[in-house]
Picture 1: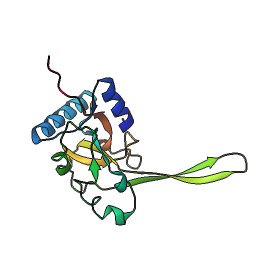
Picture 2: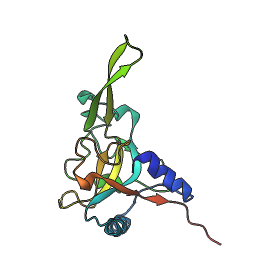
Picture 3: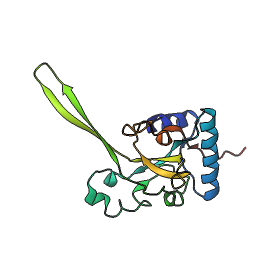
Length: 175
């Protein structure tokens, strides 16, 4: 699923896209992801978490990405779930992440028989996924991912980057 689908799924459950805020929750989320993947006959895969690259850092400009706040994985992203402290989460990036990779696709736009425009669609890894991977430096860690794809278009065969679910949360209710 992509981020829009993930948020919609959470809303249907009366919750929001969320994340973990301590080691116990990180491990519980990993166990839940493993259980969900097992139900789908998968051993590896990812789930989407709350968090998006801040607007300043949604760029392919390396001079911006190499400067503060974009060069710091604890400040380059923000979460929207205000009931969860993301401080711990942002210290759990996989090795080499966030990578700020991007996908670019050429699109030919046809307006009429005479008017053609070659345009480029660009998408930067601005969202966050939590991954179960055969790579020990990546498993149960964060990866920056393309927001509009359920699996990366550049590495569609790499199942550990496919989004099979989402972490949804809501404030506890007491009755």
